[in-house]
Length: 171
Image (cartoon, rainbow, N blue to C red; front, side, top):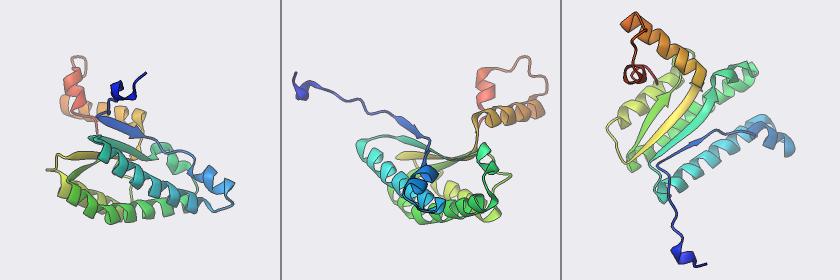
């Protein structure tokens, strides 16, 4: 079997759901904050590596709608970490022409974090080299319910709602 004959297909889109940051920290006798910090560092490395491989879109699921059930302290430092992460990596996104898209709720995020998200989305909205979807305060079921509410407000009767129309109401 000849390795030169093997052809690898690089996917167009990779979605990553980070899991185990707290477990990793516990196994290393570290606070959960250290586990999250490690997770952030790994996410940046993964993003760079898959871009170098030719992957066009990366979706990072940063914080689910269910993560609000964590301790107030953990949620607080995570929100601050997301804010710092966006600020720190915006320069790279601008340099590499990476379009940043936020998917998820905006009504529950801290004001400063939401401002950073809006800034990064605004500054990168015309870019087409790569796409980075940040799923922050995101849940699939939550998105569908919010889309139904938006569709109902704008269309009214949803009996004749098409898939194409519904897609316009999704994040």
